[in-house]
Length: 177
Length: 209
Image (cartoon, rainbow over all chains, first blue to last red; front, top):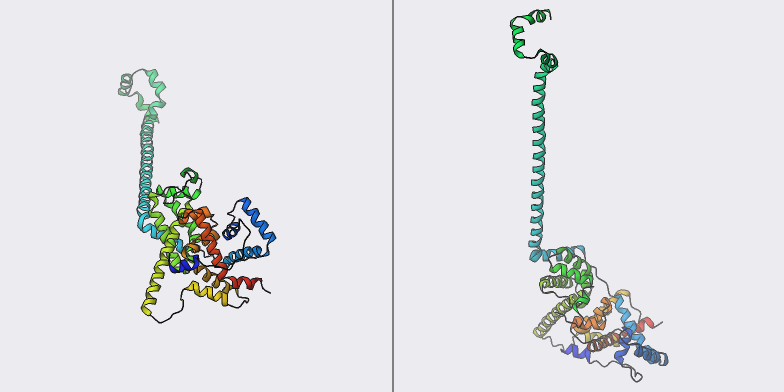
């Protein structure tokens, strides 16, 4: 304990006598709500009976109240930032970097999946349309045959048609047309 | 680390303990929440302890730095605030001791031949008893109350600030400062008695006509 501590901790302050069973420390503890109910009742009785005790208690209480006049500093946003940043330099940065890296990896995964799905969709569409176009072209090409299919079926064979062509049976009709 | 008879489980109800456990698990956002919650309270304590805003801000940062560095070893053996103010109180008292040593060294070097008591507390005590009773301005009240606070020993001042501004019980102050409850009771009494003496001029002024 240094000299100043000794000065304050052994300082004999002027204070009046108290009833038996009550110490000066108890008065402060009473104000701080740190005494049991029995002691609290004894102190309250002493305060009611003795003006000097009442004055001591009032003085201690008033002094305590004066501490309310001290300013209450509010931490600025800038201090918060500085505090967080100072910690960030030491320890949080790797963690933040890990978070950032994990976030990037997540986006890359999403992009790969998205790209894959898009490519599959495009490929599927183009294959389907290509197949449809081929079928359409074949349909257009075969359309005259399809239209005459009933007659062709009735005729029976291609050889017979060839014979009719060779006999120039179709010439007249085609010229008339 | 602060020890207590209570089981660690009982402190798991403290939301700030849960935040600190999240910090331990690597949750940086949880630490930001703790900084937000306690920064102004710590700044208040430090400002009244060292009477210097800049030094107080440094001490606040230093406190959080220590908390963060100690996160791996953290065990919920007390309320988070008790642990935090334990660290803060130690830092503030160390700073005051350093300042005091520096002041004493510079006084020794100066050897100005001053025989009077230069201790601020003594000056204040003397001043308070000699000062005529009069009405004082709010600003003067602030200054004199801060001087009265500064005149207390480091332990008394810390106990007063924890009780007054943090609303801590004697038991919590004991945990924070490593003292028994009877020791805190005694410390609080001496502190408040010293404040009463230092500020009696103001009190009489307030009570006067």
